[in-house]
Image 1 (tube, rainbow, N blue to C red):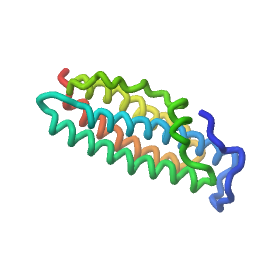
Image 2 (cartoon, rainbow, N blue to C red):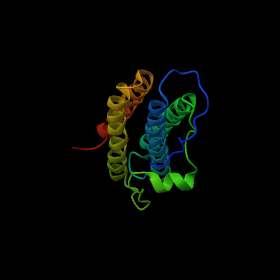
Image 3 (tube, rainbow, N blue to C red):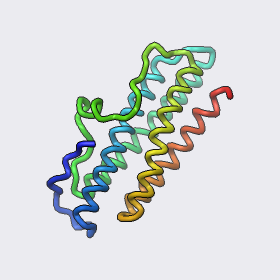
Image 4 (cartoon, rainbow, N blue to C red):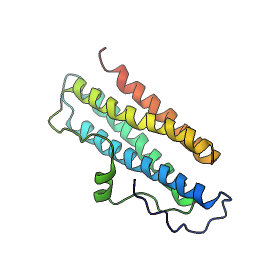
Length: 164
């Protein structure tokens, strides 16, 4: 993932510069995926159809709201470490690893399944980043742990609505 970490802003956080740069890369990678997940969740929210429309519509809006808070926290950690947070939307689209949302999918259960698949990618990424950041920066690892817990809970909400 291309992020501008060649020139860090001065910070009194006493981590080595190479550690800060790697943490900023992880954080910005997660911002990209969280932002794409937010967008796809809103697309699902706006376009879902079916007998449970109202409850799914509200649930998806609540899940999207959780993502807005999470994106902000993750991006702010990147700037606290001296980096630049986020990417322009054009760059974000080129760098996301999530599959493109299919706007023709509107049936309630199909929407939830597609969204749960994407939610799992981002939640599993957070766990991977906990491990890597924990070796070098416990504060960033703690943030990824908090993010992971919320993503897992929201994934559970999605999965609970999918017939098995």
